Length: 328
Image 1: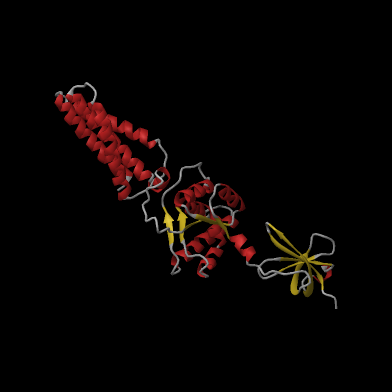
Image 2: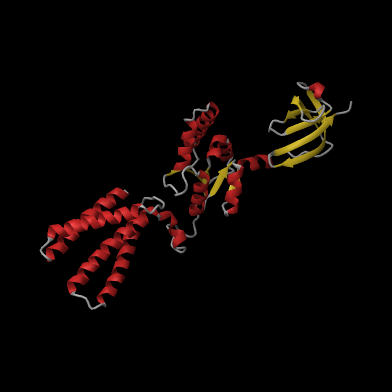
């Protein structure tokens, strides 16, 4: 049941109610017109309220029940006033329509936020918690999350928000060939996740109100609402989410943690790829991407050499190993 259907339904209800109320005073058509205008005004007011758009019959029923309760409470208060019986009847009907509509719309738009607004009301069993992980655009494009999931290090449901998918499609349609290639790789990785047996991937349809294009803020807000973790390779998103209490799984940090540990004095072999920044240095890389800096080896660029580890430097960008040529 969509929001448009709800609006049309209550427009008809308002017309009928206005017709009946107007009939009491022998002005049924005028009453129907007033009912129509009042409901259109209410819809215009409601449409300006930007909340989370959600679906579900259970949330609609909850909203209707809440509206009926509020209408009953307000109607009982009205009956305590010294008013004409007809006025009391009209007021109760109007309050019922008003609160039922507002309750339905708010419930349809905020089902996922009920556990924040009403902390002790949950739409799931308290002894069962479903672990959910939100995928960021950078993590999808990176692609290593596929191998991590295949290796059984993650068993949670993977959730791709619709706004992340939209950003991924925008990157894939970019005029920049590099961005376009990255976007298409991300879409391929997402297809691989969906086709892989044993991987639970869901597209989350609801959007989160935020500034246009502010995907990081939307992702953090959605993670807080769903009580989910965020997988990313974006350093800035990692910091922002951490400051707001959202658990972040950074693929780069995992990769760095899994790199082999080396100690000063160990020997290894490495192929020198290019010159280093400092005088007479040469640089090579291990299979996992770790940079190896070799002193006094500029003349040996392009060759496989044996080196001795002198020190190891751990930075935010990764690990660097400083070595010198092995003495013969």
